[in-house]
Length: 281
Image (cartoon, rainbow, N blue to C red; front, side):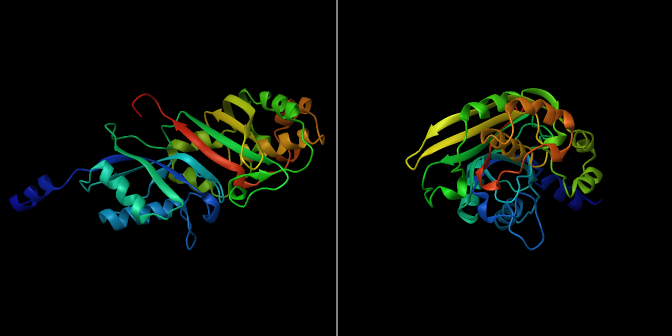
């Protein structure tokens, strides 16, 4: 390397690790992960970064929300060389992204190894059910309308079953690209192969809205399997309708078979509520 080349290397900006917090309406997207020819959250974010900085890192999300699923505080990480201040990047992204995606926070991480998925220690999801005669068109993209009779107390009792560490194979859909991800993400493969997860809280709550009542299932855990929350909700709704009992939930867990659980609740009622990291993450 000659002196000119060495000077250029010394002058080149160093890569910096970024953490973004973003919210989105997932209705019109085919989920988080980039898919050829389809609009995705990850794809829109990557394209926006390219337009702003001239670099196109692939943002790594804390989890891959499915088509139609929303987020209140998804977290993404990536590296950039562009010496742009965090507040400027946040404003620029919000100007160029579709209005259904918004960046609430952008920051440069001191921990250069920060990774939104690998370092997450807990996630919280919410599933929202509308209970009323007419669901407003302004609400319908974000709830599952359930007009049939439901016993709230049965839902509450069912939710308590899932607290603690369990094998949730009965509530897991097959992940179509799990094998491909395990090959490319060796750090994740051991966790991906296990269907054991720990649930820290699992409960239903009532919320009033102008249009009617919302029944909200909130669950916090150290990780979630593909379609796990939606399958939990679908199974609990079966119990609430009297098609099974809350007392059957332990046997559904023990069966370790998707056939033992109930249907998958629609994507539109599900929100990634928040993601937690170790102190400083």
